Length: 256
Image 1 (cartoon, helix red, strand yellow):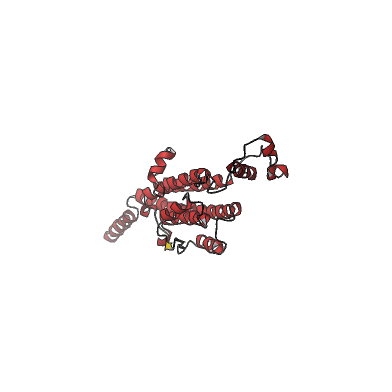
Image 2 (cartoon, rainbow, N blue to C red):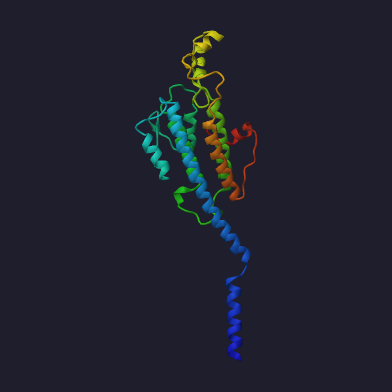
């Protein structure tokens, strides 16, 4: 009888120790699942960033280094962060430095596309702590970093669409149709706008485009998808960024 009592006490004690605080066990499972979801978000963001660079280089063929193109893409595909670029003979250090050069109003910025993409990649890479390997739980991530990344991407989406150099030319051609770019160039020469001038624009005259054609939203859509993934990641670690006005977001961004 005594042996039976001892066995029962041992059995129930063992069960108690293995099932102590089941809420903590459930929490650990969710934390682990959340970390896996963050890795998925990162992969989708980088996938869209690579597509974004490909489209940006096609649209702005004079604004990237053909020699570095495959290396930059490979860095992103393999989640490395060894690439560095020089500006005025000095290697840039932070992602803010890269983004600041990308949006510099100087019309002679070499490889502007590359500065933009590398700057975005570095801030994404650091936010998701890729250099530290796979994280078991979401508790090791910085909540404020994800909020900051969210605002950075929102500001970049706005600036890519609107920023111009000192000569009033767009820094990046993304949403503009070819006829709109041609029109802007003609207006810069001092030519007065007229219906006849528009009809004689090469893209219109050769029937490649129409003034009724919609603008290109592919670039904005890709950035919007990246922003969605970042917001999802922020939600997983409990710090979903609040949607605020662009002016408030700019106050958080350092590269402006």
